[in-house]
Length: 241
Image (cartoon, rainbow, N blue to C red; front, side, top):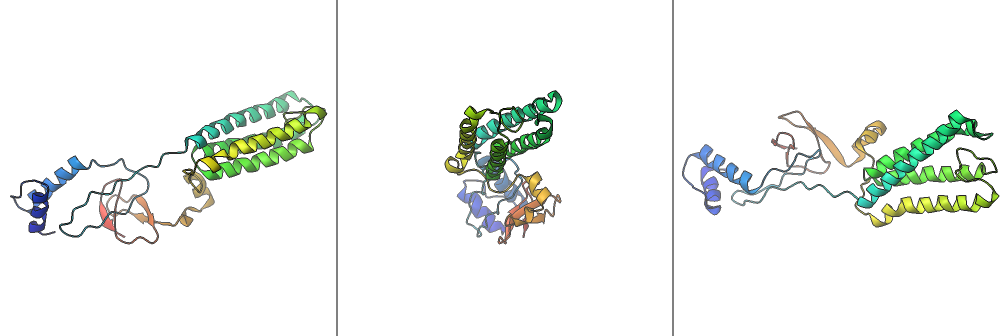
């Protein structure tokens, strides 16, 4: 922008218009910092708004979406249930209870780990955590039916003929409870947490591309279809992509 355009901005904001170009720029920057405090740096950048000369607009702020409280609460419940199933498996591993206890203990331990992973992903606010947990619940329910009998075993928390229907109802009730965030929490995120995305190698399928900041070499992500200016959240440098 020319000195005249910058001084016009100063006049529009009620600032002094005297001085050379660096002085006017510093004056405008100080005014921006007071009027629009810099947001906390985020992992992903937002496109920097383009303005025509003399047409000043407030910088675009970066907002963090509020996580699903229902998803977080159910994620905690799943994690607690996972520790219960892991403890139940360990009791049979070391205690040798039941005829099939020591054989089914590794399967029960894997199920417990599955609940723990699903609960952690759900707690992080991802819908895939719900889907993962429902899958583990389905497998757990099927095994509970297959190995249901008079003897206690690690893959079924109910035994005896009188508890058969109760076991089925418990499995169905748990699945309905876990699925509640899918119906009542539209703010849950899609995809997987970043460590799992990296493990699966699916970060490049999110509709964004990686860009390296020319100032601090931080790795940024911008939408594939976007072309224009972006601001690095680490060093606040502005560059074109």
